[in-house]
Image (tube, rainbow, N blue to C red; front, side):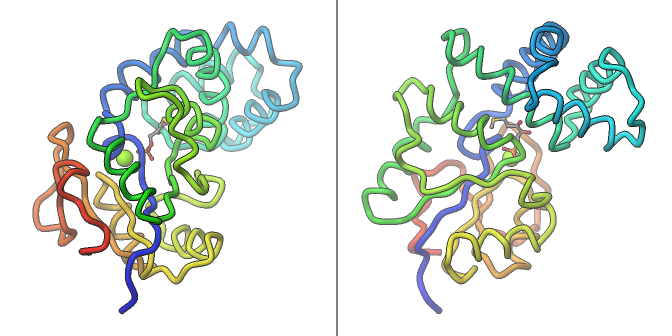
Length: 231
Ligand SMILES: CSCCC(=O)C(=O)COP(=O)(O)O
Ligand SMILES: [Mg+2]
């Protein structure tokens, strides 16, 4: 079997804390959604999100106000819907660039990503957060801009994270056989999907979420003890 040449990482619960996403990012988006839509509704990228949400809800006739209410409900439900994720990314841009919010990345994840990159491993992100949102969280950290470490980003526009064809598509996009890609996540459903596509997997159990026992993926409490070449 050939060795790992790339690491594909989830964000929430893996490189970054669940609490940062749920208690900082989501409330910021929910608080600012209405004002953001009012100020930017004429922009094509915002219209695209609103129209996408209406289409997903099966109600293309929804008003902007009702669509905002629906998006706020989806934030509460943590719905991994592409139009919601896209508009959240647009709203978070203000939060990061103003300095009101700094991207949370665990110190061991920063050290691990830097060491793996220095060793020649290619690093990729796969998150339900939109690609612009991924670049924001890694671009505005206490350690500065970490985006130069990454060779590429994938979000739900490639496919849902719990479906194995999404991982096959990612392996093809990065030009490696799946068995040379190690996927890191705190979600057992995501790890199963990646393994079904032939990727190697490692589960991050950072003690923030309850991860069911007996899932069969090698488990780590952080990146410090995780050596991609040993998996
Ligand atoms: C890019 S930070 C915001 C992450 C987010 O919106 C989310 O839903 C978390 O999903 P993940 O796939 O990173 O667990
Ligand atoms: Mg996660």
